[in-house]
Length: 171
Image 1 (tube, rainbow, N blue to C red):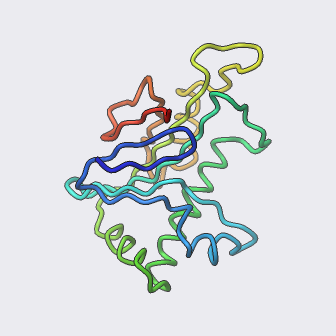
Image 2: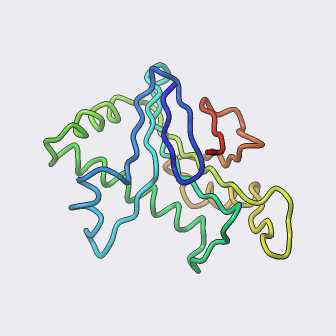
Image 3: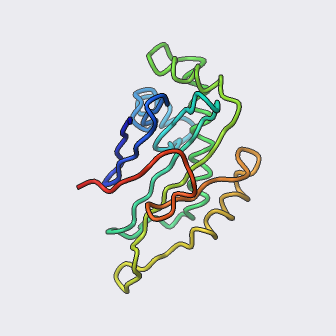
């Protein structure tokens, strides 16, 4: 298994997959991030070589800290998807580092999929209420990114909806 960690969550992907933390790429951080007054980034890119699927995966963990941003969470994610796709093209056309090989594999994929891993407190409390209904998030996200992926997956550790990776809490 390959492991990528975001905050207090570890994601376990099959060994034959190609996986990377897109928002850690030097091209994104040093060049693309400030393009057009600021581009956002998805957390992970994952390629399933058997099914030829490119997954764009965003991770939010609100179990211990509430969301502070005023921007709508679905609109933020939709922008991250759009900006990341633009970044993949820019790397493929302009970069000469090892990430160019990853983006080359992205273009061999036949399907583009979006996953949003959203952890919230399992029990609502006044201090940490469950702010988002995953079904509502999925529907709003679907409406925003339908031309890109009409059936996004909104997951949490307790309900992974059949995605081909696993998520565990760190520590």
